[in-house]
Image (cartoon, rainbow over all chains, first blue to last red; front, side):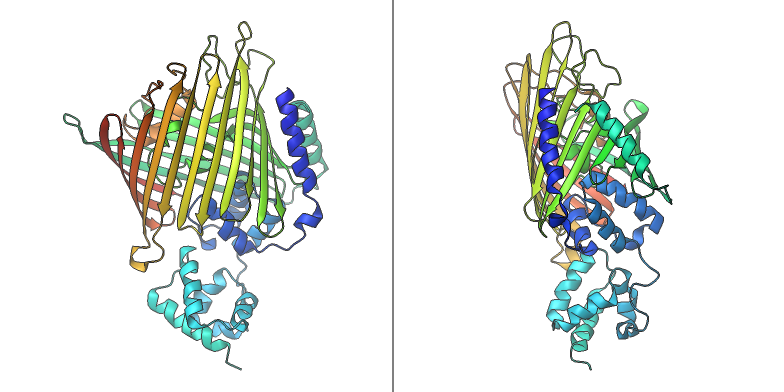
Length: 157
Length: 354
């Protein structure tokens, strides 16, 4: 039992370290998904499961991958889609490619922030290469078209 | 702290939660089918075992999950149905307490990487196939994770089970629901992600058996992984086991590159794995029956634990090419050989995670 005692003491130290000071930073569910899920397997897209399915599967992954509760909540916010993540009146929704693929996982606010940072078409293309790894269904031509269009939005009044 | 106190704390924490407002159910799992081509003269290519492993998930509110995985295999012994794990997992205010039958948290392969659609190769790594490692335990575990800043994470798990069983000087590493002594088996894993792409861990397990002539077993694993956004996966584990009448050392290293950088080849993933194992102080003949069950998905006899470890090490090379039809459906082609006796074999498998 001495071994068990040492293990529990070590574990208690871990638990004490979980103070709000360490965990107060807001978590980005998309980033948690990208960083933690791919530690073990190829990613599933948010569209793969129903909201109820994701709620059960996300807790399952919390146990399997040892995620914190805050990470689980951020992951659920990302994986469980709202009817539409983008504000319907967002000008981005005018592009059918954006409406079909990007807003399945990202809010228009997030994409608008990326646009405002002044990304060029090449940077957007690199982004789409990553997004396709996570399940975005874009052909080469569609990715190029969307990258060019998003790059021009930074200069569109 | 005794496991009974932990159980009481778990029940108390669950009782203090608000009434469960919603439930969610999901049926997931994975399936596979294989084909084996031994290259040695006089051997016959054959369709291997086929099976599926349904996973039932039932989530109650935000604090409780019931999860169960069956493994249903039609193989060389006919139809076989096994309960791979079945746990009740409760969030007790951050840490998670799990009771039931759970996959061993020692190392990373058994708890996280062994499902056929996740395992980059068809076979288990060699050190897991030599009959010296448990796959699951019946008992109680507590796990917790902490984020330190935006990059670093620390994860820990401790668990207690009934311990190894047996009447001789060689342990049986089975998830026993009976116990022949009061000395429980204990183990755990501590790991750190200094950055999200890197995970380093150490884990271990110890337990005693045969109260009339007490013996003790020690297992230890050190693991490291470097993964990049689902295209690069490099990992290695070093395993060691010791008990009065024997012991072993083993290890495996694997690199996989999904060719995301070339659009037309992005569905392909070459994989290379090296494994080795050797016995210490004489031969090792302690088959772990639940791992033997788990080996059945590997097809025919070629994945079976048919090694007797001696002080002469065994070396195995596996060369693989995976073709992803989707991120959760892949065809695996493996070429496997050993250094000592060559004995090359080609394995083909279709794996599907759902």
